[in-house]
Image 1: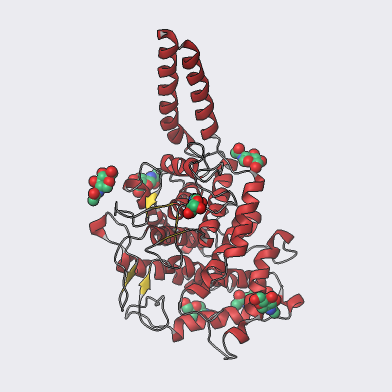
Image 2: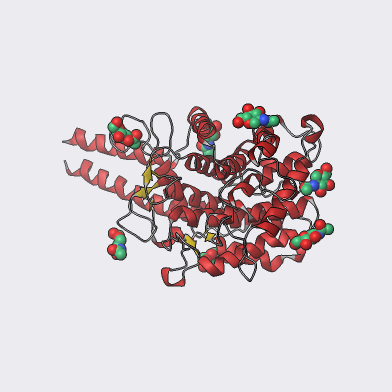
Length: 423
Ligand SMILES: *[C@@H]1O[C@H](CO)[C@@H](O)[C@H](O)[C@H]1NC(C)=O
Ligand SMILES: *[C@@H]1O[C@H](CO)[C@@H](O)[C@H](O)[C@H]1NC(C)=O
Ligand SMILES: *[C@@H]1O[C@H](CO)[C@@H](O)[C@H](O)[C@H]1NC(C)=O
Ligand SMILES: *[C@@H]1O[C@H](CO)[C@@H](O)[C@H](O)[C@H]1NC(C)=O
Ligand SMILES: *[C@@H]1O[C@H](CO)[C@@H](O)[C@H](O)[C@H]1NC(C)=O
Ligand SMILES: *[C@@H]1O[C@H](CO)[C@@H](O)[C@H](O)[C@H]1NC(C)=O
Ligand SMILES: *[C@@H]1O[C@H](CO)[C@@H](O)[C@H](O)[C@H]1NC(C)=O
């Protein structure tokens, strides 16, 4: 009995110490990236992959890095950007074939979504800016401009100027906020056009007016207008919106026009606060696929992306309000399997043995649970990078996060000691 209590004390100390330092190994992270590379084939998956790789491998070129220069250096980009340039090269190199040889305004890749192809635009702009055209003989600047003109001239708009997420009908999706505004704002930076930089903000403001649901505590609806709407509060859509706002905030705040756009920065900073983390987290620390619908399955993708926005916001705006929740999500996502065999023998609760995040929504059918989500893999990369950068910056707000963990930990130590003393 005494031995059992000692054992319990040792195990509880070990477990709480271990979970507080939870971290993916280099090998696990490289498997996550490998699955992402294999799985990302659709336009938005390629754009999201390019963004995630930039954040992790080349933070000096990421708009989310607080002390990186913007626009970045034009000469000798590091080889860690090669995979990002590879995505831009294959998309722009194949553009005439994939778009049936049209000229002028056109998307980067033909797609029934208007917004999704633009997600690759930041990588294309970076390829132009750093002079990849001189080796590749590809017109990156022209391809980016054609994509921009397509959005403004060919795609349907609301009467107040919100660009449709679909080509065939006027329809607004929360996903749009990650796909289009960061491209518009980055375009404004590299062409030194304040009005285009501000367009990223304007589109977010318009989308927020249409999608934010005041009667649901500020959660965003997924799809409004046209046929085939989804007025539920899709968790991944809320995460796309928060993460897209944050990229535009990062872009504006370090741009050459930052001093002219103070109000825009303060709006984005308050809009990004991860409302989803406030009320809807389940005991698993994840969210339901629809944040406020208890009947929907647990989804790790949305929680992963939302947690990354909390670390980034702590660095970009100094607001650490939701850090305790983000730490809980991160420790759950990167944590060990809770009991042996609970995840088909994988050592991690939320990854399969070949490092696919689980459980996840099917990214090609948003109401259904899926098994392998390329965007979910990108979100893991983004969470790892955000947390790493936050740790490197001295973990601002960590005290509030650990007050909670410590209270928990002390509780178990005291219980264990009482048990040891009692027997
Ligand atoms: C996370 O793990 C990596 C090894 O994979 C290690 O280099 C790094 O120091 C760890 N970070 C922290 C904050 O523990
Ligand atoms: C076109 O795409 C294929 C893969 O689909 C790739 O192998 C090829 O290199 C691309 N073309 C160019 C010019 O990049
Ligand atoms: C392309 O890069 C050049 C700098 O080399 C820059 O002046 C120009 O504005 C860029 N064009 C676009 C569309 O980004
Ligand atoms: C700057 O962006 C605006 C769109 O916001 C566009 O109308 C204008 O033509 C751009 N200016 C230049 C010089 O390209
Ligand atoms: C959903 O579950 C939570 C936690 O169990 C509970 O507090 C909440 O009332 C439930 N909501 C609905 C609509 O049943
Ligand atoms: C951080 O955000 C929370 C939630 O919106 C807000 O209540 C709080 O005032 C903010 N704190 C700071 C320092 O801006
Ligand atoms: C575990 O294995 C079962 C049966 O092969 C499979 O249906 C399920 O998707 C697996 N779960 C995970 C998380 O890999």
